[in-house]
Image (cartoon, rainbow, N blue to C red; front, top):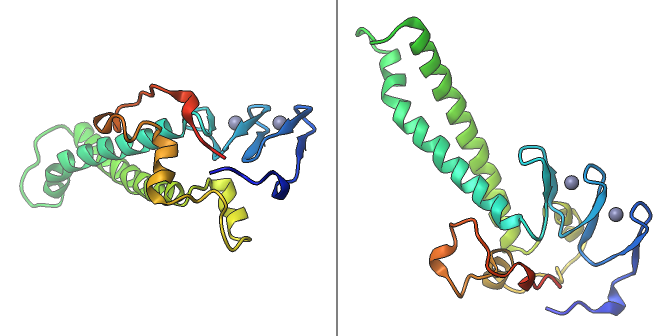
Length: 178
Ligand SMILES: [Zn+2]
Ligand SMILES: [Zn+2]
């Protein structure tokens, strides 16, 4: 999709002392402008933007899988905790198992919420920051259809289907963001 230059006001970042391309936002933590900035993530200690958004999605996906797997593995021990029978293990290991189950369940549910939110953002070709801008416009100029919106993030969707869930990219500069 080609943005109409006439409809895009030229923006200038006074902190970087540079012109800002469309969909660029200044991150006060990183101290620079980030293309298609979504948010500054404290968990990955970096900005999430155009170049690393796919890896952020995979980070959420695999964290969800890992926490769900641990939760399901510990579920029989958690159920046994409330039964009348004797539970094997010392009080320390039983307490650790209980706490691990509760923490993993809480992480799995919260990460699932984030994952669903970000998939819906990708489907609409918007970021967390732009979601507020999008609400003010009737048509979102960057929305080019759900499949193409996903392709912008995953880049090589058509070339290598089986690599979708591997955190690699063969062509970082093929992102058609405008
Ligand atoms: Zn800047
Ligand atoms: Zn940042």
